[in-house]
Image: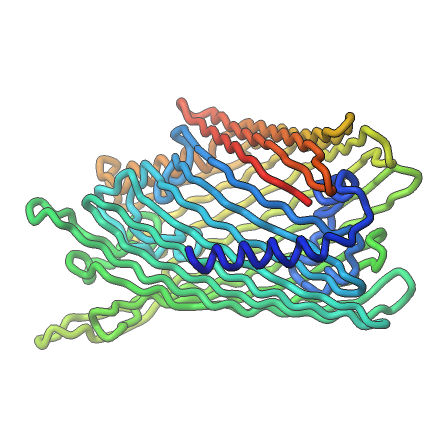
Length: 506
């Protein structure tokens, strides 16, 4: 927490001094900052050198908030409800040709209704989590996030770097008692070369290091549940079940990308990116013996076109990604000395996903009290998850469509931003095969619940309202409410999320 306070104060002090010379009214800077145009082409997500072409005036935003999610819809391995307090700070500065940005956040909360998973970062380490049949509520967590970047444009050359770090601690004060620590460090770099007055070619790279220490304890000596080391779709490594209650996930990734991007923010933008992520699951109690491994190849592509003229904005974007995740299990025998001896290795688990989205953007954003944007979108999602022995499969194909609306209106010393989104997702095809898994078992019921949640048709509504009041010295004080609701056609599944926050921007 001391490190968080230091970075928070440092970010506040630097941004205050650099913003002191800004001549652009905070109301205009805020509209640019919240506009959907800012995130329509996402080149800077992959290559920080693209930030060198950003021409928005600087802005700093600090907030404190409370978030609560209720309902019974969600992956049971991650829980269906949570609540947390949040502190967030982010800033973008552009002194001269320099571009500087930073983020810092702290979350403190708890998650409920977790089944068959006692590891953290399920979306990163699945399916090789440590689990038990009990699970439970009141899993407390603290998460720290820091990010900082710098970009510079000199002549035809632009370059940028970005460093990000996330630390997560999760624990429960009653049985079963996980005590988990995750760290996730990434570094991005990139270089762009201007090939004409309008366009530049760029390339970037990603390096990442991930580690999680996952331990599980039971203080009640009677009736301890069995600990399992899951291997996907309800399977587990039988030899390690029972007393192996400490594991280490150790891995990382590297990636690269190439880009064509407009130097003035308008025109054609294209990005192709690749990333290879892998980790080993190890047993610290047996000299960090590796027992399974994940290798995941991710391919991403995005093409967008944006034009702004006479106060009007027109854009179109298509992006897609393909992920191929392969899980390899090591086979062991236990010798007479109590040591595990490796005898074979086989790729047993696979999860392949395809996702494609087409979106358009149209808006009126001339310098006037009222501006608005509308963005219809549609897409398709496909996932094929399988385990070879015993043979188990979960396949789902879905289409989605919706419309996104954003408006900003100024009156006297106030600015009101409204964001609304409505969507519908329908299932085209679905299949679940759980060979050799009786439906009466707890893990089977969990898998069926996950399948019902993932494959159900659903309707979603999001509404965000932010009210800023302009104070002296080009500063705003704001209140913000963000509400999300999803209703599923399977049973009585639903989820509802509400976040209330207050902050200051300058």
